[in-house]
Length: 233
Image 1 (tube, helix red, strand yellow):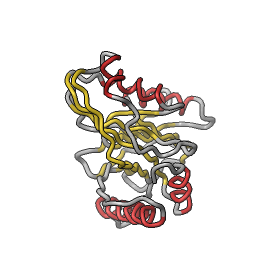
Image 2 (tube, helix red, strand yellow):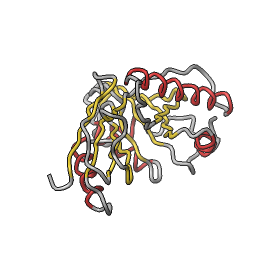
Image 3 (cartoon, rainbow, N blue to C red):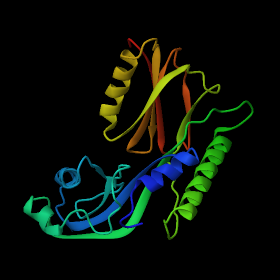
Image 4 (cartoon, rainbow, N blue to C red):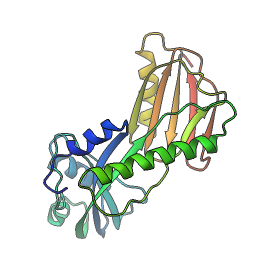
């Protein structure tokens, strides 16, 4: 899809009710890589870009993710040159590669039905998203193989007891997400509580509730943290 608008991907995702974001992936290798500076370079190189590094980033290799806006054109070359990174003091012996890969982050919120286990719900949601992403590849010009990783999810003890007034997904520092979630509750009329659901390492979901927050369960238990607090705590 090099040279084509990213809106093609977002439009198809919308047509199948897939809540997804699309990232272009560059791999950067070198010595003493400075993630903060590299992210800043990425965001200054592409107008209004949002950039991040993937999981397991080190000072010798990292995956640089550029979030595609609907108005972006899908590029076929690295966003940054090795010389740019080195001139900014963000590493030495730097190499940059672009493998024409798109990383898709899809999110779902589901209600646990009576008699259904969390693992069953997780399997159903995962299968539904994987089918939609497979259809997206087949019905756009994406090519190649798909590899899926589940980020996990959180659920209330007795189904969804939060009378939801609004929600906000965030990517980035979890401490910032905690504060932002509390502030979202404080400025939402009728909010009595908020549930902050930590999805994997870099994603979180804040739900503001017009009812008291319940305790939460999580699945899979090894990669999800679920927190609740009441407005005024």
